[in-house]
Length: 135
Ligand SMILES: N[C@@H](CCC(=O)N[C@@H](CS)C(=O)NCC(=O)O)C(=O)O
Image 1 (cartoon, helix red, strand yellow):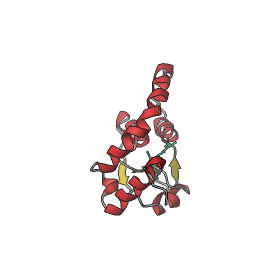
Image 2 (cartoon, helix red, strand yellow):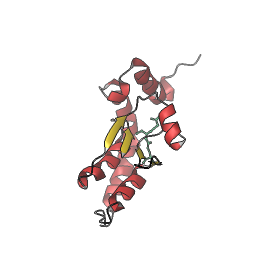
Image 3 (cartoon, helix red, strand yellow):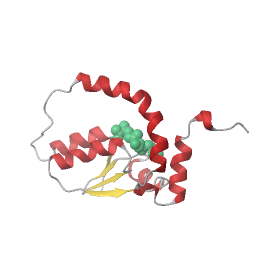
């Protein structure tokens, strides 16, 4: 199986963890950030992570990927209750993390930014509207 990813993406980390937890092999494919064709071909939209199964079919949504892989051997590990305190914490943190992280990610050495065009694509997409000067 292949997991198409952006290394900076927290949803990728979520999807990746279940493979580690179950000690299952997966091939990681880092897409260039400006590569719209690959994810659109796989799932019809520009988004990661994407799981490509051995039969060639593709699946989006990190939580769906986690659930699919967890059940794939008939021995699911994620059977406990979810913790509402973590849900609350994520809701609070999401309020500011999306403002703090993108400018730092845009400067970091991730493989999805291997070309200047890919880095510029990310920076342009994440630039806050307030930083765009009127013309
Ligand atoms: N609900 C999705 C969200 C995935 C998502 O938003 N991924 C971001 C990267 S962290 C993305 O692909 N954004 C579009 C883009 O970067 O062009 C999931 O859980 O997998």
